[in-house]
Amino acid sequence: MDMGLRNKTALVTGSTKGIGKAIAIELAKEGVHVLINGRNNEEVEQTVREIKEKYPATTPQNAAADLVDIRQREALFEKYPHIDLLVNSMGIYEIMDYEDVDDEIWEKYFRTNVLAANGLCKFYLPKMMNNGFGRILFIASEEAVMPSGKMPQYGMTKSMLLSLSKSLSKLTAGTEVTVNAIMPGPTLSENVQRIIEGMYPDEDMSFSEKEREFMAANLPQSELQRFIKPMEIGRLAAFVCSPYASAFRGSPIRMDGGMVPTIF
Ligand SMILES: NC(=O)c1ccc[n+]([C@@H]2O[C@H](COP(=O)([O-])OP(=O)(O)OC[C@H]3O[C@@H](n4cnc5c(N)ncnc54)[C@H](OP(=O)(O)O)[C@@H]3O)[C@@H](O)[C@H]2O)c1
Image (cartoon, rainbow, N blue to C red; front, side, top):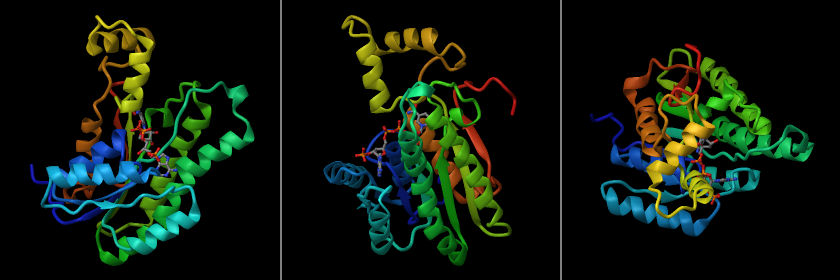
């Protein structure tokens, strides 16, 4: 399906790895010029080269920056003042006990997972409104609506993103600009794969066997009983960014492998 995104420009934050990278690839597949972001310039360059080789009709570019740093964000705005699609995928997460989460950590998570994305929205949303078309997409998490209690500092930020998404969506009434959020469940980023491999060092076990054991022991509530592939989130994100998805407005869209047990 041609999603009608050819020659649009997208900034995908945190796109040197995992879900962000998969979203950038799926957008490039649709003819989108993607701006690749991460803090490691080498990895950004490598991802730009990889995408350019696979999708030579597109012009991926280097948007390396630490998005938590306001000055680096502003430099990015100067370099790329106009984009059509903003995918806020960059985020940090780790399992923590509530008692170990001090104020500094709460702040770090708020600044990284919420304020950085909000800073980008504040700059690009008015431009999208002037341009008559735009898409903002937040990558939240099933933790936003079903906090596991294992990462309170993270769950809080993901709930906030759903609220921010709806608030911004309210500003877009009557336009072709949309703001939405996808809530992935457990997804097989390189990071997650490394953790699973580390938990099951047995070389005779295939990765699918390790995955099956891990899911049964740790995530029995997943109906999928495997990790979501980053590409699956990428494909959904590309659709939500497309002109066919204009009726999604401030929606929290679940692709969680059935982790959330409720209808809504
Ligand atoms: N994986 C899952 O199971 C899962 C499930 C639900 C939701 N999510 C959400 O999906 C998003 C992506 O997760 P992931 O697992 O794919 O992440 P990941 O593999 O850890 O990748 C994170 C990306 O963000 C970049 N990054 C980190 N801090 C940054 C900063 N300050 N400025 C710019 N870039 C930065 C990283 O590159 P550098 O480190 O080089 O900067 C990397 O490209 C996150 O928001 C996460 O909360 C993930």
